[in-house]
Image 1 (cartoon, rainbow, N blue to C red):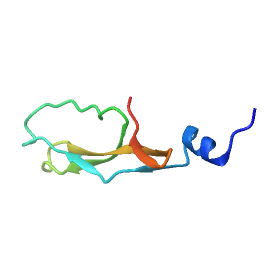
Image 2: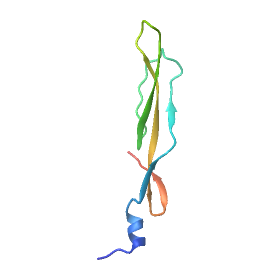
Image 3: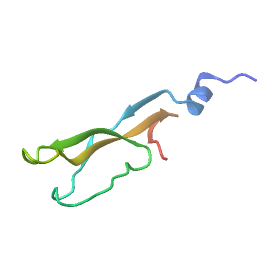
Image 4: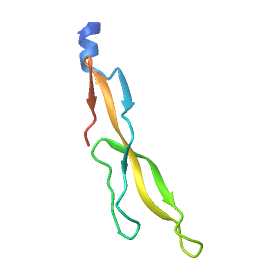
Length: 80
């Protein structure tokens, strides 16, 4: 059985991209926090801040982006 180009385009990923970056940054550096990127997203960067000469640097936030695929003529977000 053979597929036409239109039938193939409807079934297979033709392109992919990341969306614009989103930042997650808690209100202050005195709060412990856990971050898990939303389903279909990947962490794209971290924010490191100097906390003083006698202290370790602080990870104060993260950047993440959602993955999207182009299939059947439309962009769709990838889910987990």
